[in-house]
Image (cartoon, rainbow, N blue to C red; front, side, top):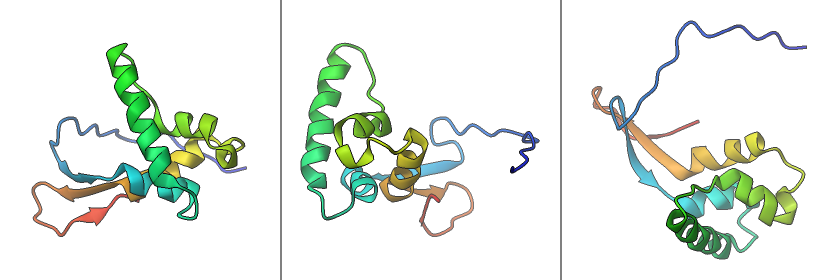
Length: 106
């Protein structure tokens, strides 16, 4: 069994303080989770439509959980696993102060 140790610190970057999100590509994130052979664009469009409805109710949809319930191929996957597929593909961030080239989260 793997032994986990508590972190010595936790950093929260709220509001582009240290890292700046340069891109958020929902289609790419969903494609990474469901595969490009699936109609990921239709799934992304359905998520966008449901997101608008949920915002009218002052609710927030969680993408990974939403995919788990609506994509049969992901039904047996954990939300954590789905998120691990989505986030490296969906976002592109850069370090705000070091002037480094953009990089994908991983």
